[in-house]
Image: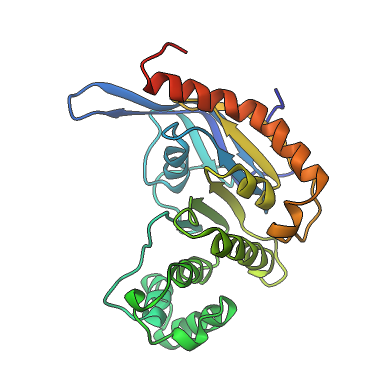
Amino acid sequence: MIKDTPPGGTPAIELRGAGKVFRTPSGAAHTAVRDLDLTVRQGEFVAVVGPTGCGKSTTLTLVSGLEEPTEGEVLIGGRPVDGIHPGVGFVFQQDAVFPWRTVLSNVMAGPRFRGVPKAEARQRARDWLRRVGLAAFADRYPHQLSGGQRKRVALAQTFVNDPAILLMDEPFSALDVQTRALMSDELLELWGGARDGRSPASVVFVTHDLEEAIALADRVVVMTAGPATVKEVFPIALPRPRRVESVRLEARFIEIYREIWSALGEEVRITRERGAGHVA
């Protein structure tokens, strides 16, 4: 097993023996994650993959402060998470937009909630709409946009708040293959240049798509079949900057894919056999 021991400074995110137990409607205990140890360093892009329903999304909610761990610790910048952290941005699988607001108003909402004056919030929102290629759509409503355009709104909504940590829960899963690749390239460009010369945000990106994980990340974390814990962590030795469609054709990319799939495929099989009623 490749140990999760990235060097250097205070980590952006740490989970130390973290676990989460939920109560089902019948009152039974369901363990979503257990003994979870994970470290994300400052400015690092970490992708998390694992079988369906293993607890990947729960890991994000623990980091965000939306859920408290049942056991263990979750830290941001060396300090325990005790609520929703203002420096954390979260991009959900489903669009988190206000349907009655225009695109511009949706992107302004975050800064306004944080007390930014209206004129400054509008200027920042317009700047981010320009960066994501939606300057001409500022007065449109969400239902007037394509799926890819709505995802660009979601990215602008998040980056406009200048997050130090970016959590992404399968943000592109509903998009077609071509649009998904374009959005991945845009994400990498925004991530690399969002903070005006400072270190980029630390990213935790949950996905079911192993190719997507490898193309985007500095490290890929493979989770076990539920209850989830870290099985292996793989460094991605591919140079940056990257273009998703180009990097997928490189021989080293294919080697990395095979190496990670040897670990991930076993957990997928276990999950499938459990669902079929077999003992793994």
